[in-house]
Length: 385
Length: 111
Image (cartoon, rainbow over all chains, first blue to last red; front, side, top):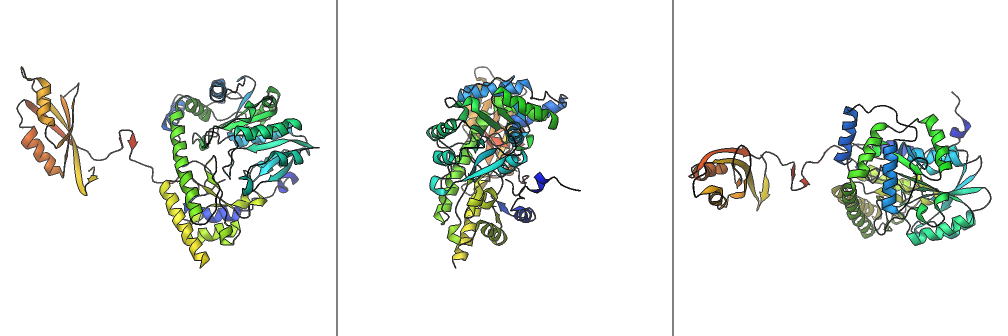
């Protein structure tokens, strides 16, 4: 059966074969998992079970339950002093993944460009291309702790550039931006009259400073599509609940697409999400505290054994260099897996500029992290001869 | 059997329900004091409901605990009845959960 040109031309995942190798192996310590190792807090699971027992199994409104949209509005107002009208400016989606896809399809005309700092989440480029746009990658490096600079944006902005897709804290680097850094970026965005699609899914997992939503900066609210969800901070990946907030015309356009393609997000997930916003702040803080403990351990340990690694400010990823081995990221990852049964993700999965880096997820127990470091050290010593 | 290692020995813990015949001028407090003065008794509570005192005892073995109950507790004046429950497994104590899921349910690798 003929496949569409658009899909056919999408670059396949360069590391599919590596993924298949990992999935086929037993007794692997995996530092390659992009989701929390915590189970969803019990209150949330109990509410989901209860909602099924009570017979909540139907569709909801396309835009999502008004109770959830109102709860999100109240939460954002309290947490960040960020006000959105739950009737017109909030859409509940099937994870932030769907919100990203909807945002691009809602705003892009064919050929319009979106700037994407690299390394980045693997879906960023494809969702732009699937929406008919063109992804323009801005390479970052360890020299700037993988932060995109205002100058890079300024030089890349121009004809045909509609906006920038900024994910912070970042998967895979853990990079985030202080308020001051975001203000400098915002100045350039305003100068070029650009939009921002702001993926802030890991916001509650920011360790060294308070997270600042882009939409809270002066004169930015009307040009930001703010994306967030429940997968990471609340450990609700399987519930598939995200949300988009923004100007009514954008949310309306996203809802139009969503109503035809998805109809609505799952009701069980929505009811669980309402409970999450009401009652599990303590659980979120406890998970964050544990992630931070692991972050400090893994970055210190990697540097001690010779894999230089910058300190990430958020999420649950570290992005060390494999330069000391003389190998590229794929060879390092493959050899480490086969010789020491430790799995991590080659940096090239996240951008062509990441040949010398690997992503380590510390969404794994402290004991696993300690054992993994010992095995990596063994591998490095053997490599050194 | 719940085993809490302390000083390299294995300790057995039991929760004992104690029913007391209240006596004039003695009351619960002085009987409770006689019970909790034993070093084997780690906790002692006065409760509402079907019995009077909940006593938590630790010993080196089931026999040690049983001997204590028989020799010291049951035979005490004003103790009408005891029921001993040996602790088999700790799930959660003082906010700390002891049971952890052993099976990794996540896929080994994901973005």
